[in-house]
Image (tube, rainbow, N blue to C red; front, side, top):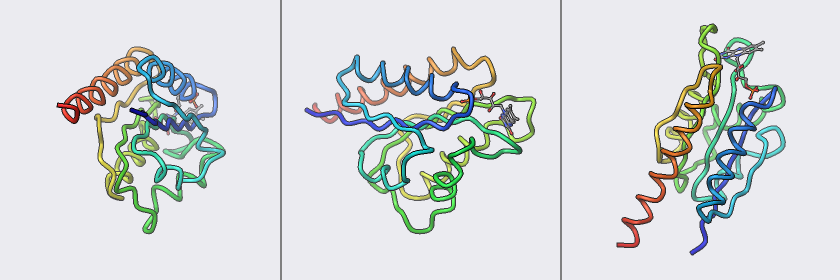
Length: 155
Ligand SMILES: Cc1cc2nc3c(=O)[nH]c(=O)nc-3n(C[C@H](O)[C@H](O)[C@H](O)COP(=O)(O)O)c2cc1C
């Protein structure tokens, strides 16, 4: 059975992309058909074309989205129109706890996708600058949740 999976990342210096690539590797190893894209070069409607999506993003400025992803962020977070009722998703938020708006961009996506009808398949992880372990735990948790769900459906 096909297992399509969308992975989107928003990054400036590459950390969120590294995490997205790690998630993609983990997914491929489990037989998922992975599409991985930058939020800077895709449209929010892509989220209506996949049953399952993982989002990884950093935060900049004073709680702002990474450079180049502003249009994607605005369209999702302030959407009153596009609905994601068939989407199951999870968010990995990268940030730095020195900032008041810690991981705000990832939090905003997580809230918006739920408000727009999506189902959170695994809780958001908020990672500080030493994000390695947190990102790995999130990836493991996401795929454990997905496999558990598939086992229930197959039973
Ligand atoms: C100028 C600047 C502003 C930042 N602003 C925030 C912020 O408001 N909130 C936050 O949690 N992290 C903030 N960060 C930290 C980044 O989100 C963090 O370093 C992240 O790991 C970068 O990931 P990336 O390489 O995917 O862009 C900021 C970093 C820089 C350099």
